[in-house]
Picture 1 (tube, rainbow, N blue to C red):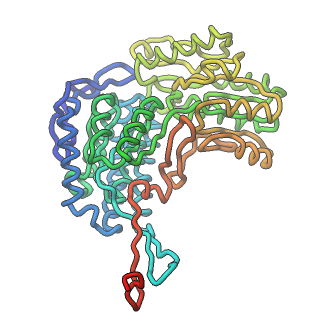
Picture 2 (cartoon, rainbow, N blue to C red):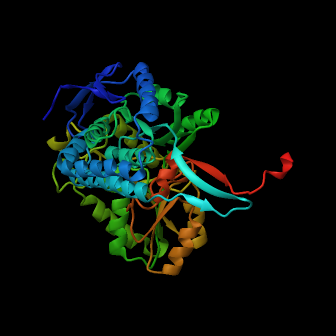
Picture 3 (cartoon, rainbow, N blue to C red):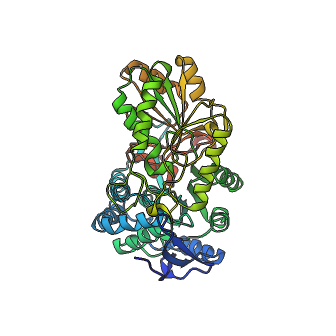
Length: 491
């Protein structure tokens, strides 16, 4: 139901109203108000970071043995699972994703905390081979106060992927959720409190990225920023990080190619291509938005793909039958519509979608139909710029050299998909494509145990994986003198 309750935010473990402007978050399917809160102020940022620094120094979290920190992370995972349906319904209302998808995201968040709990208590430090009369060790210690800046498209999963390894490493964390989807970050902070995380080690500061995110990033006590979002903002953060000599990870945009070779299993490929671009309403950095199909099967494949896209169920996110919900906002839908117009003006032909669905169900929400455009060149605007919506551009290719050249002709290099029965071709193509993540005969599958990130304008650094904790820790070398006699130079 709609609520007008004024919600507090978490500032170094203190729950109170933010000092910034009051605003509403709205349900993208109907436009109704979900929550009302005050954004954080720049003063709140200072209080949160100073409180986090104090917690890092005095709460004992960084000094706990790894298995003791792990116990808290396991408890967080357990609490997420106990409240899974409540959290899934809240995320549905927070950003309009279909309920089946938000249930999967909540399960993913629980799994992330569990994974990093396990990684934390089993992380090994190293005795390195000595090169003299000493024993050498490589050890890891917490950085201090780190920041997580998260996007609106998958809040609880994105926040878990940053908060869990940061806490596992012994840090205090300041979270800046997307302004329009703050609720999941706030709920995670409450769960961290209940699980026994010492006060001050987590803060959640909603607000505009240009104000709150910038203030966090520039603060001298912030030793690392993990950011997921647009490339232009990522560049800005990288510039600040260069001035501060601060560690960053940047998971940015994408314009990912999906390739269907002539020997592909078409049933699998059609389903995979649709899932890769139309799930999450295309609001995904790894969406397979550029489709390259071998010319010999292009017509047959496209006919099947168009039929499949037109049969997708666009509708109420609370309905388990819904495959596509609304876009995040009316303004973002307008941006998607603008890109579709550009594509058609440049000579593209519409094969599916290209409009808003009709009916009273859709009148108040920001819905848009799954859209397929063909007849364009890879150099055209909508083949090069990220749309972040349910828009697929399809192109035939002739031969592997032609395919590789086109697929790699992008400033982005985040993901790619390959559909073929030939394992040798799959391996050759996976190595030839410039991308941080490649799926073969599947798409948009994730494992918290596998590092994730992009190349080029798609970002810097990696998240996930067993060693993801080390991204939030400083490495230190320790030398133990074993010489019987004083160092000879002094004599």
